[in-house]
Image 1 (cartoon, rainbow, N blue to C red):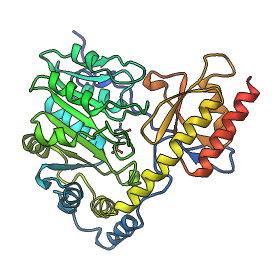
Image 2: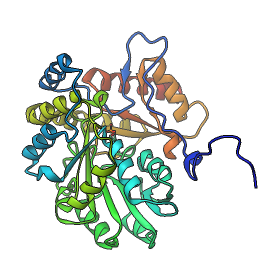
Image 3: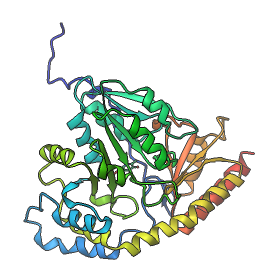
Length: 368
Ligand SMILES: *Cc1c(COP(=O)(O)O)cnc(C)c1O
């Protein structure tokens, strides 16, 4: 038996690789296009900004711990029961809380090979065992997930659409996944990019979360609403799940600024529409232009695209990343997602998108 010389983290904690956010800097570049964190090029609604500013003269007051104004605004917008909405300090907060509530030591949690990194961290932090289901063509595979379910499986996380691949499962497939899970396994449908997905067979999962006792849908204000700095997320869940999460969440997990700005953002439907329209215009353009340069691009329904590079020295993803950074274009290196030969770029402003295509054309020419 070894004698500890100080406090020892419990099992699983030291197996966690800390999340590394997308870079922001491009040293030496005169103009920077930050396309590394799937932020919106349109910024937040001006109404959200005004609501944020309105909090400045009341900073001595605790916020409403129940985020009532925000939950009611969300409920109104989507026709939901406000009592079944729980808000989080970003949806990351909720993803962690759900693991903390449902996963105990030795329990299993499933996610897919190139799934969002926070799922693994949340499962390990809860003392659980991460179980990875392989994907097919960079897309979650329902049969592969179901094949890994055991009596110990307490949670399944599915980002739909997924980050960093941009791929999605049809609602039919999501329902098939749910139908194959035991009632004691919680299915978490993370629809962080749900507003961008426009194909007819896609659904955020709201309908399942409304009608099933073991389905939760999570959403964020960090992406299409442009409030990443404020940390605002929410989930729609069965009453029993909301009750359990409410017992363990921080009593004031959203700041007053987050509540006010979030409520104003969700009410500004026209602003969200504009951001979705911008993406619907530029996503196909970016994918077509970059594909035409000879790079493989994974089909995406989100606000980013995954670009693949050959392993050849001088032409690799690492080389492309360096080339783009020198031009002030900051994209996401996705090696930590098991994709060392790819880069993920967010759909930016018209100027940013054109800058990326021009830079990749030069990169392709220089390395041909
Ligand atoms: C960006 C993102 C989120 C949102 O996280 P927040 O904590 O709300 O900023 C959640 N899930 C996925 C898959 C994401 O890419």
